[in-house]
Length: 266
Image (cartoon, rainbow, N blue to C red; front, side):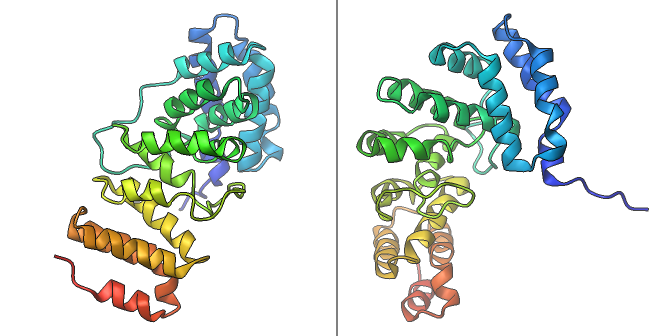
């Protein structure tokens, strides 16, 4: 007899998960009303889908945390568990229950006054759960400053932070709001990440290039050829980046895609 698998929303967001974060926050902020928070959050779970649950938890956090944004965000970050192991070469988003933390920062901290502080909070949060969605309002509001910050973060020791630089600037990031920036704004960031030693990062780079290819195939091809000719990435991983980055054009049987994929790497 087989057991029906729970919907993803009920695997990722459960009462136990909500109790977990409530206890973690209570540990660093004794004034936090953990029981009230849990009751409020789970009361609406039956009627909410996955993304709506993230939004609702974010709302509940705002209602239960201190009014002062910096004090509240600092408490959230202090309450987080240890970062994902920076020595790993691959990984996933992290624990979805922490997604509302980055959303809280995006909703409350996307101001000129709090910009540097908020970016520091997102950098910390993304090592537990990807802040790829939350970084996008900051990119739209403060493009030059945030792009400069992300360029610097491409050298971060933690691969989740490096991945954020590529994934957060993707033109067509699934589930995310569209950026108002030019579709090619992330190319300088990708130029620093294509030779990354971690597949979690290079997969994002390839996905980003594939996004670009849907708007400007020639730019995507030129970028991939430049990387291939640089010799900075291991041949096997470079082949992966090329195949994955040009996959939409390969499926369309674009001749330049065929040539690029079939060219030998040494």
